[in-house]
Length: 244
Length: 261
View 1: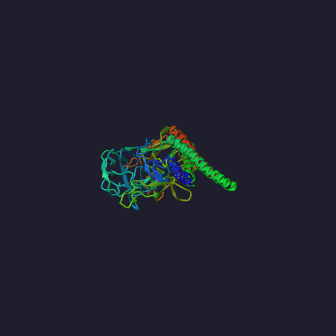
View 2: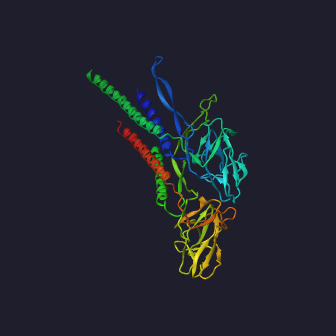
View 3: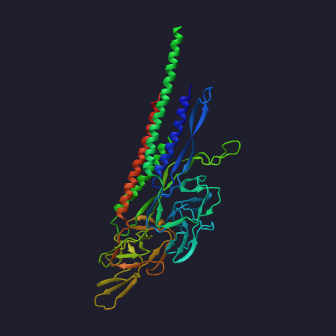
């Protein structure tokens, strides 16, 4: 009898979480290297009646997954801004271990090495923090990640890829963690003087938000009607007992 | 109501973005000004259902979990140290640094600050000072009756004194470079101070390997690009509006719930 209420509730809980995902996408619209989250829903069937086919379906928010489409590139002119073209990640050394990111806005540390915005050293193709002499004047980074300091090739920024991108755990500062061993990414290219904007499509997110707001209202109307049905049934049944 | 907090982080980030952009635009005609850029990063993710957890007793696992991001944060306001355009001024005490390097300025408290704004002046005693009257290292005094001052590319200052055919060499300007220029602390009045992030200053002279050269009668204008700033401003404003729409939607949802009987 209370199924309409609980079905409605299951949808409302899922919608609320969905709105949070959309809100995070919109909040990170201008975050370099950010990739939007999407939500996956699933139905859970339950048999209510005695007959076959008398089933109701609840909704479950099964998972969030990452939209892996590349973001558009934005020209910045800054020599240490890098954008990764294609399927590739750069590794950085954090206190918690190696993490992977697509946000390659680098700067020089005080010892001359290349670090991300969060101050984490960038790893070279051997998995070691990349060292650049402190007195380096010009740093050029080639499409394959070769770091050329004052005309001399010095090291190569490690570009890696993963088979299962959805299995990566997202952390703050655009850092991703994974148990999978990194593989070389021959198809990935680095573009110097550019950054990759977030792949959030604002219009799509807005439309989605309006959609789920209306959905929410519709569900609450449905719950109300289920409630009304219950109330009138109780009222009528009550009258019937009074009559006899 | 997590959604309100998430949208609020987005609005605060965009507000900071607009503040940084407006400071860039305000300083468009400031000599030696370097534009700043607000850098954003996503916040941590809350795992409601971790990927890889068991979904049945036969060992199947969840391929992708539910991770809800908590919004955005400003990570840094990075100064972009690209070369500004050199503008010819004709003034003999105007100089620009072409390439890397900062002029050293001695502050009244004895500390050293660094600047790229080379609109120098003479103090009543004839010392080379900045527009604020701070001595430019190494402290060069121009003799009386000087007809003309010449500053060559390596920063040597030559004075042509009345009645003397040969110029007098008064000394050479010191330049300093830093490993991480973005780590310098801006203290206003076009001055910067070294910090642990910028690294120790490496002193040298103009024209040396790794140092820029000095151009007399030029000033380095700011490296602010108006078109880019205005485009960024529009994009920041739209992002702000969209975040406020998220707040509205979250609020509407709550209102729907309160109105349910």
